[in-house]
Amino acid sequence: MSTFNPMIFLTKKGKRNILIFTLLCFYCFFFFSSSGINSSNDAGHIALAYAMYQDHTVCLNDYAETIVWKPDYAVKDGNIYSDRLPGNAFLMIPFMVNFDIVSAIIPGLPDQTLPYAVVAMTLLPNLCGVLGLLMLFLLCYRFFFLGYKSSLLCMVIAGFCTLLHLESIHLYSHAPSMCLLTFGVLLALQSKEKKDWKKYLYSLVFVVSLSTLVELQNLLYLVPLTLYVFHVNGIFTAKRFREALLPLTISFGIFAAFISVLLVYNYIAFGELLLKSNTYNPFFTEEQSFITALSGNFWEGFGELFVNTYQLESFWNWSAGLGNDIPGVLNVNPVFVFSILGFIPFYKQHRIEAILFIAMITIAVMIAAFHVTTLVRHIFTIHLLLFFPLVFFVDKIKTMSGTKKLFYWSSVTVVIVYSFVRQQYVSNHYFTRDFSFGTMPYLSNWEWFILLNIPITIMVLIVFLLLKHIGYLKTL
Image (cartoon, rainbow, N blue to C red):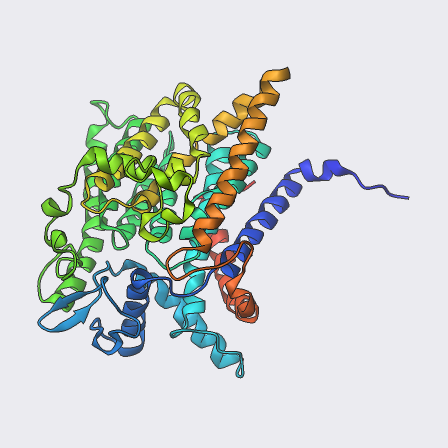
């Protein structure tokens, strides 16, 4: 008679299956805790995607006050346009196509969409959140060779106890931006000491340039990422510097192609070659130029991003920190305290990579802190880079013994539980959301969830196998 062997979970296949199962659970959790349109922000992205796909236009006059409302739109010559960059809407369109295909193949499905295909489009941030978690796990386990249990724990904490949950359940631009940039970081790390480093450079430039159509400031991350690839592959030596000229030229061409897309879009919409799509927002006049938009007080902005110094009430009165007033990272997700402490061993063990992460975090913080309107979600693009060093802190605890180990594990557990409850409160009370703990607004769309994911699953498998075949990804 055979007996159950728990060691099966420690095999390579067992670890992979646990990871896949955990990610699938998060995917379901993100989708079922979504609730459609939350504010004028995601409504603007949805309206633009709908107008481009359904009406083949970027003018949103037909959707004023139905999908588009104050203060997130632009006005030029009496016409209404989106004040968002078009990248997020571009990424939504394939999900709308998927919705139409499934609807055509299987008639009579319950229509739970408000407005058009919002349920299908919601899968975009859901998937970005799950892919972000996968990439966080790969950072910990595959790229920095940290323990499987520590890496999995780090991933689970990020999914439940940080703003990744909130950004993965609504159609803002932040989840796609985070996903694309984190993938660019993985590509840069993968290039280290590789003969074919150029293909990783081109790939990361492509991915990060694509992300600039989602959030424009992402173009700045190309500088530290490119410098990292050159440094770890010895391109800065006198003998090899000439090797960088052609890759730099090609990389600039890739970047210029994506910026051209943005310029063309803005020319079609506004009749001008603009980079800022919110230049003509009538409610935020400071957005008319980069200088006025970034004229805020840095220290006030820094405090808002991390500890909410100017609204200390939000520490004990959670209702004071909702909507655009979500408190700073260390307030709403205090588990980040351990991430910051983890930067010390991270820097000691992987100095160049730590400098890369710190440089990218610094860029994000500088832009958000100097912005006239400082919001914690404005640094979500580097959310996982800021969170990642937590795994080093966890690994450090594992090496301790006795009372010290018990004290640290107890402290971490308490903070994790608090961060989880605090985060669920924020997610359940965000703008139009007013749900009790454990509410799953999209549970009624379970049929759509299954059917829409059939073609998505096929596409994901094809892409995964392709990336594996050409050596871009290493699997467990």
